[in-house]
Length: 295
Length: 293
Figure 1 (cartoon, each protein chain N blue to C red):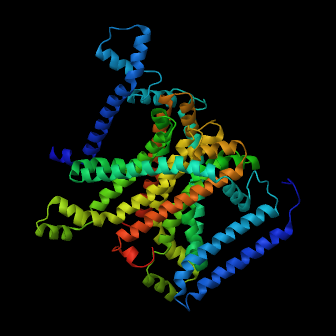
Figure 2: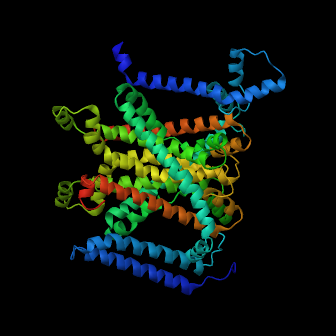
Figure 3: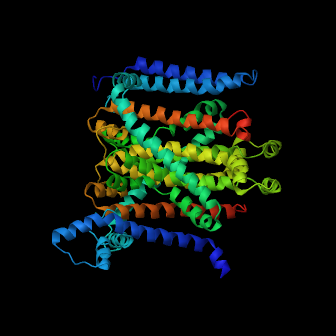
């Protein structure tokens, strides 16, 4: 790249024009909604996409127009090229960080949080003691335990999974306990008149009623898990993994590779979140927020 | 007596005590292999159980430091070192805290501004809101090292880059909470303002802003907690100079477990007090507004 080259005003100008045009297109689309209500569905997808494309074009245009050194901020096209050219490395990192550390830690952390919540559900004493602690711990910087976990469980993925377990455990615990309390007295009384046992009430009434709360925790945890695994890798890893790649490639000034990893992390995180949101729609179809059509 | 057993404090204390017992038991168990090695090398064969347990709890670099080791380390580094010293935990906490507060302040301001934009402009609402949500699926903490490096290259260093990471993390709960808050006035209230012939500005300051405040404080509690996490992680890649994150990193490099644990506890105390301060302000404000909490 030619550093310090003069600003290319033509590119900057066209970027600006594109931005204005996209802005007016979006405003126009939203205004049309009032006349044709059918447009609503289309708009809820089209408008954010147009905005996103505009963002990428403006990014590309400004970086090229002002000749920003690629070390600082590479244009999206360059990042895309890097993604295409190094799929094998990206896949290796993805396997290590996402498929092993994140998914295993997520499953174990959410699972144990759920089971502990059911276990303490029968003991008001444990609930009184554990819930404030759980709420307190949720506010703590838990990623800080990463160095300890690396020391205990070694450099490979188990230490990252351990961090993810600790991070996801408490949100799940707190949410499930409040979810189990969500069914009201009337409904529980009805179950009593049916002479249903504790477990029948749990499975047929209280767990389904806790669904929205549990899915809320699952969604919060999906982003927490990815963050936990990547940050834990800053404290020591084998020679692959998303966190490892990011920290070493920054040191080598290969910023496009870093952005490629970030793009992958963002896509993986969004898909993870999206899949859970989709399952939520299927499982808790009765909830007003889903019946209403829009999420 | 019954009242004591049924109280919340009693339950919490019991569980904390149980955790402490588990902690000590784990410390003995995890530190045993190393201690056995020490005895073997020293040729000590006749050791009693109590002596052994005592030794496992007072190792210099234990796998799991015992509680009293952590707390005495904290006492020494907080109270017995001058606060300008690099060994003082207060010094490191202050560095982290200042980045947290700056980032939190910018994030809150920025979040409120975005929320105002979203509630007042339909196109902005449709186009920006999905991206505000998408922005949080990017693990920003993972980008932290790069942001630090990039900003360093531009010439920004020290406090601001860390604060920006905190900003990025903390603006999100504020936006979500405030959008909800600004939309919370009911139609009937808005209609009343219309009949008063109130200008948009007046509607905003006399109706929307006050009714959004109850939403602001819970968001701020979440925001300040994650701003602290952001500042700590932001300190990891800066070459471990100063701050709680740097303490964690250097502790993990040199195997100083006691140092890691004391930094961790300090971070926990900091987080708890920050959330508590926001809670106190909330109580004060809601009381002044005449809202029952």
